[in-house]
Image (tube, rainbow, N blue to C red):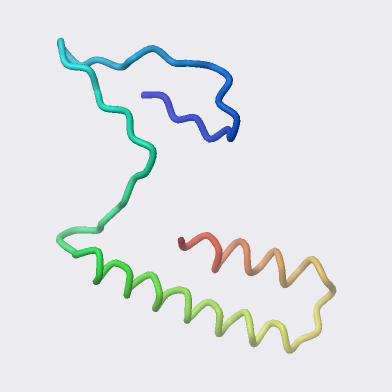
Amino acid sequence: MVIDFRRANTQHHALLTIGDTAVEKISTIQFLRGNLTSTTNTLAIVKKAQQRLHSFRRLKKTSLPYPHPTIFYRSTTESIA
């Protein structure tokens, strides 16, 4: 399996085959936990984000210097989606 996160894809990878069947190339992926539907999954993600944004708002009131609130937001809230 080849996973390439670079924006400019300069290399072309050989097709992946399992047995005699070529594996389909996809550009997006969606993860669902257990038997959740996408609506239920989306609601769970929104709930997590709201909880973490609440923590971020409380942290913001402490008047920390510039990079610290940004680092907190990126590591907790932005990483959910």
